[in-house]
Amino acid sequence: MKTFLILAGVGLVCLLLLITLIFSEFNTHGKERVWFVRNLRYEFSIAVDSVQRNYRTFADGRVTDGDPKFYREDSLKNSLKKHEKLFLVTGYRNDSISFTLEEFAGEIRKGDSIRFSSTENSITGFRAGKQVYTAPLSDVLTGWGKSPFER
Image (cartoon, rainbow, N blue to C red; front, top):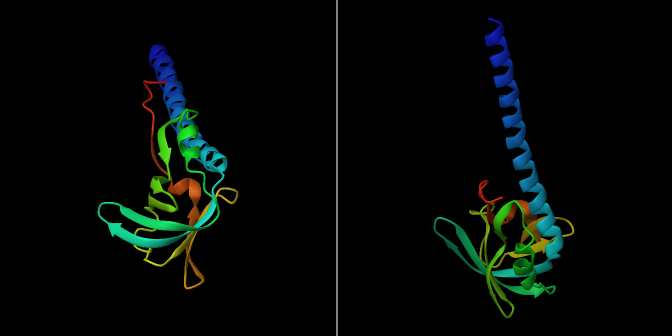
């Protein structure tokens, strides 16, 4: 009986440590996303030119305000510790960009204006001058975590 209680106690401690590890892992992923957004320093607006819906919503647009420095996404990728890759913009050329936004899959329309703000950690969509949708920019990023065996 004494041995059983000792083994049960050790098992319970191991289970609690495992649960703590899992929760801390999810928490640091979110912090790294916020860090990534802050360091992007994106402050720009786009006008949506086209929207394609497949298994994801892809949108193309042209920059109407601000000067996004898209090279920052590439330079920050080397500093990621918990994610293999994070990105917002899937392609860019001159003043045109392509991106995916899962949070607004059914809401984005051609002609919408979308504001990206790293300082406010927000992405806001406008239609006919009225705010239609908003979300934290860190939640809109596309990416995936590193394997726990690579760390």
